Length: 595
Image (cartoon, rainbow, N blue to C red; front, side, top):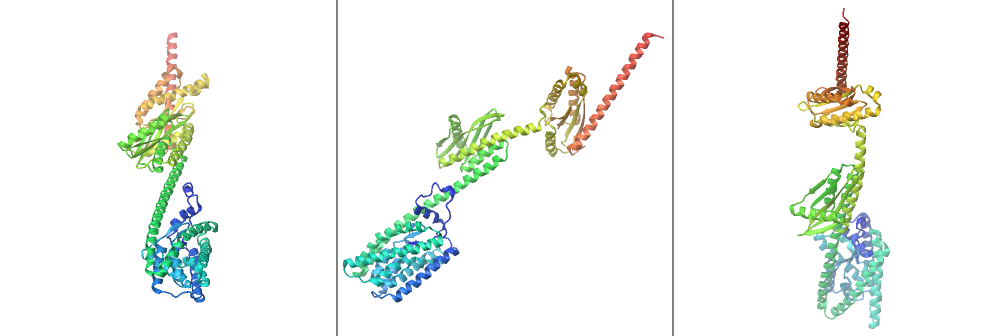
């Protein structure tokens, strides 16, 4: 068993539902991405200690153990080369490491060469095999040194065979070989468990489950190694019998590694997709929380849905008492037809619908908005080529729609409160706060070539009217004035009227001052002529912005001065008129009496 995986990264929480539930397979999935990375200090220290300790034990075994048989150099070189090939090229990923068919070559080495020398020869084979990976830049230099520690499994059987061999009789051979295999299993279990726990944090209980699989594989391969050893002992060229077995295992190991690699790629793709979905949902949630208007909300929902589901195009429609909406993004003619069909099917059935046409899929869901100001019913659909939409993507889309509904209720309520805060409840005109906001916006677009006109209008005689006819009649009169101002400004581009309080009104328009004043004169004349006026008139004053004022306060002050100047002139003219009429009346009476 070879293990070269350092600290294992925690599995992404969003992939818990697709990762393996088997602990050994889960360990394989979690460790796959870090198998070829540079070792950290913790792993370097653990693996270096294991390699140095192995060298000390292997050298001590050569020095202290009796020599059972002589060393045949050519056979040793051949077996070391085969071991290097099988240990580095044939790898079956399992747990945090690999299973290699080492017993296929290790058994002949133990039975044909001096057992005490086999651990060092195995280590040499591991290093030689690692050189190939190093030259192909598939491994780091320290991994070459760490591979020495992977020869620990050879210490146990070598020690047993060196101390207890050779055996006599069939039973003796069976007992000796069984004891050697058991010793190898125990040493492999102890060393690999300690190394994985210290270097990678793998729990000992989990590592035992991995080693049980390794033992099973080794137990199946070991008898084949015994047969090869017996054949080679009588006729050395029969070592070539290992080649077909090695070739079959090579094909199997490459197939398993390729399957695992593809599975890991799919997991990575799924992780990226889910991360993208979560980011898109989070961004949409932030956008919803920003209190957008309904138009911006619907556009955000459609764009976010396309992004979240990696779609090519989308469509959103709403019809009802709210303002109708129809938005299409990225839709070709073919997409448009399919999107319309999916959106219509979802709206009609009031449940999700997925349609497919010529390799393109469209997913539609019902979409509705409701608030105190009205409701709207419709649908939302997204489309993409080459792949259908999954159930988890449908869940994301439904979640977006639900969050959009909640945001719409808040937006509609927020808009209603905002309108109330900026509207005079009696006349339904904008109030002073609304005037301030609109004035700043108009002032930003006003210049010498295209100025704006601000006018103040104040009712004359309103207090007497109010005292005479009551506050209810006064409120009705104020509402009539507001209606007349709205009607009079209907012909002026970007004209608006405001009630500043009491009987004072303000008008802002892009019309020229003389044009606006003519309009106000006509409005005042209509007010005086109306029976409901009961002698109530009005005075006004205007100012040109930005020529005469660049701030609202200055504009109101100048307009107010001009309004009261006009009010005083009118009052003076009315007094002169009244005095003249009185004098004329007195003269008429005197002439009637005669001299």
